[in-house]
Length: 392
Ligand code: NAD
Ligand code: MG
View 1 (cartoon, rainbow, N blue to C red):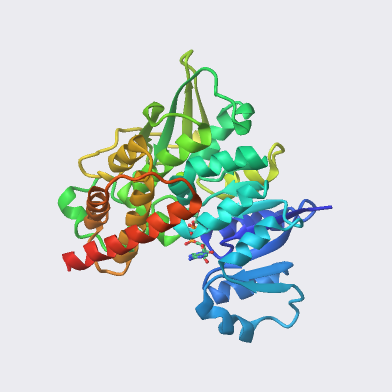
View 2: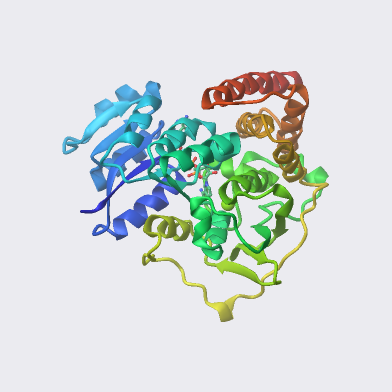
């Protein structure tokens, strides 16, 4: 019997790397479910190559386009809409869910997989940012195991005692240190940042990723979201999480213990490594990646973050420390602002400015359920769109 994997967001960058790992290990995994939003070409290729048992399309505008082009040999079932993701997360044939939808759009399906008690490989960091407490509490109830896919958190996971996975306090922990490549504009001045184009912003020096996370990496909001993600995954306060710039992206994070020892995980920047680690855990799976040749590394560098030039990280840290609704607003505002930047509606530096404005505009409130989170998220998106219009 092979393990049934559902890949939510199969047409994205993480989806593609996940399918590659699954393809290398047919004796171990089969693709039970794939989902795509609107990339019909990519979805058709996945259906032809992998013959998944179940295909979900979430963008209603693309339904007829998919029906017209569905390969004749496809014998699986087809479903539409977000509710189909929730059903698939509960299917008995699904053992593992790869949560790889980008943004708040992944929250419901990620939460459903956690509620169903599945092994959840978590790439969709925005879900944890928006609803970390609710997701972790639900995992404790259902027995779901949350395995980090984000390379930094996966690196920390590899350096920590496994008992943290079942909610145990991490004994002897001094500090978690997230490494950060610094993105494509690491040494740029504030003045130059204002003129950056979307094309420049999505060209990350070390990683090939989706457009939204590429912009987040360039503003350093990605590191802010990762800081919040780490507090939930490892059950720690933000005050013991530090960030260090490491432009080579070879060390994927550090864990420091109270005796002064620091552990790190090193690897080529290739997402198939953390994906294979989580899919195979506790076993190691062979991955056909570029091996690190230690003697050929020309040097590993570390420097402090320039918070005056990249204010997004401190904005996220503050939202994390204040808690409640703040991370939800931070995430929603950032998502809308990034989309507006990619659409040439606002400048690069306005992405973080607008996110800060939105946090200032909304009075603090408590959230108690996923529905509360989603209604606040919806309200924020409206407010941010208004703020964007005002700047035009
Ligand atoms: P991507 O843009 O390449 O792919 C996104 C996927 O989500 C696609 O399959 C798309 O069809 C689907 N999607 C988009 N909008 C949707 C909607 N409204 N409803 C349902 N599905 C929708 O993104 P990515 O780079 O693969 O990132 C996916 C997630 O993984 C993000 O949360 C990102 O932060 C995280 N992540 C990515 C990387 C990376 O290297 N790409 C690394 C760490 C974490
Ligand atoms: Mg990361």
